[in-house]
Length: 93
Image (tube, rainbow, N blue to C red; front, side):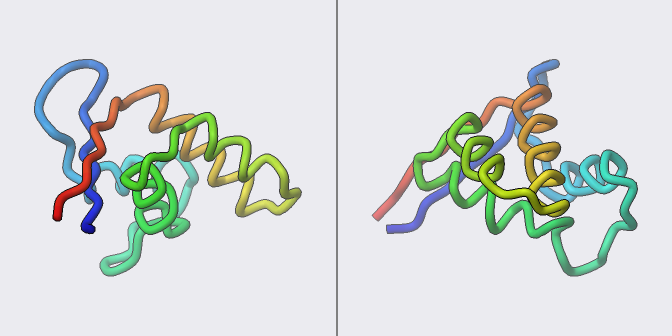
C-alpha cells in the first residue's frame, strides 16, 4: 500500500513543496543544497516515517537514543518541521 505525506505551513497557505522545505533545512543546518539528494536524507527517513503513521515525538525519541552528530541534526530537522509545519499522512491501495 503506498503511503503519502504532505506538509502545510503553520503560518497558513497551501501544501508545501518538498524542494522548498529541503532548501530551508539546508539553511538551518548550514549545508549546501544538493541537486539530487535530500539534506541528511530527511525525506526518506522522517517524511517516510510520518507517512507510515509515526509522529514527530516518536521520531525525536528514536534519534535521541544515539549520540551521533548526524542524529542530532535529524532532531534539529524534526524540531524545525514540527515548529513550522503540520502534516497530513494517508495510505492508498
